[in-house]
Length: 244
Image (cartoon, rainbow, N blue to C red; front, side):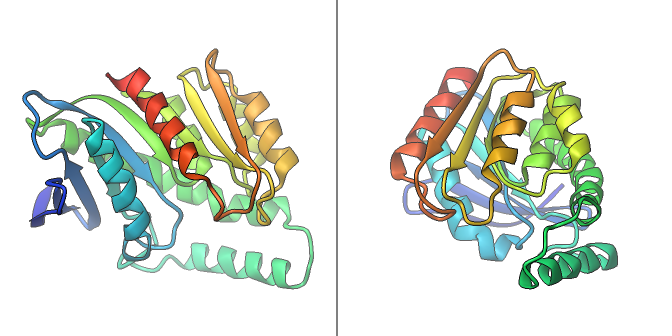
């Protein structure tokens, strides 16, 4: 892990860009901390860190205000990372189906999501190894947002993650429902009821499948970009309960 840039944001949060091998990432830590702090891993869709930065830094600032560090890494095939032919083809097949008004087949979903999960999860675990080796970060660890299938796999295979806040979305491979039944950590799931790109019933079925004894579904009226401010407050309270 090598830090490449460092700056203080206007609220005192320390923002450092880093590379882990070929993988770019960003770490945000609170302005001042007297002891090692918990960490929230910030997930995001495969649109590239530069495009997602405004949303990520807003979430990181909130985490820092609650006394947590936050970090994120670029997903495989996204941003400045090398293009990934199979992923590009899967995205093209998805666009073609949507533009034609056709249902998205299980084959397209599997090709789009499963290879991403298989690559992204080990990379996230490697980043977690490096981040937890820093003296200012001590755990426990939470996972927030991003591709929900990545969050499911991490919740199953990574024992250092103590709680997860997930964004309900479509395009979940059927095999991930089986993995969801193995999830036991506390969950806070956000669902936009009128999300035009989301199969609401599939999202509800996935929530039902989660094996966690403590799981909360936070559903709000409105489309994909209409998440109310108080939904973020509720998610912050969830992490405060489980990471402090």
